[in-house]
Amino acid sequence: MTFDNALVAGKLRRWEGYLNSFRLPEWDNIPDIGLYMEQVVVLLRQYLDYMPPELQEDEQPITASAINNYVRTRIMPSPEKKRYYRVHIAYLIMICTLKQSLSIAMIKRIIPVGIDQSEVRQSYESFAIRHSMAAQHFVQDVKALSAVILGHEDEKSEVTAERPEDLITYAAMMGGWSALLAEKLILLEGLTIDNGGSIEIR
Image (cartoon, rainbow, N blue to C red; front, side, top):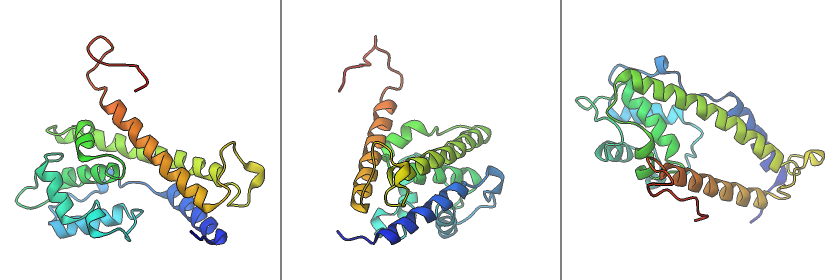
């Protein structure tokens, strides 16, 4: 693998600026006029424009077939006469965001379905706040990890990526550990140490 350090550093700075200003749409700004599938796909790709457009079609979380699958697996409400309203779009924003690291089976356990619109709004607004906070935390971690690449050797942390290849590996591993932790915690739902929950290492 060969990388241009200046290009990588520039991409990191651009990514930092983007994430520092990125916010999921506010509930009242999500259209509630009944959009057709094609319009929903376009809208979601605008809302979540940080997702790599270079991905193959079958790897994209925002496609008509993916949305149909989300409806079929009942992870979200069905459209009304083929139209998607604010509630549907809010569900799709949460699903598509979480789909980057969790399976549909895991997402289904943490996003409530069959609740009224006020509860969906509350869930979505809470999700949007956590999304923003997670982005800020991520930015700080990446800055510390890539201090050498960014030319800030005096700000090196104990774990530092000396080369872009190191940063890629660290990022992939952190993503994997984070997804694994999320899954392990989801699987604790409804359990206690007395009824089957375990605090063993595995």
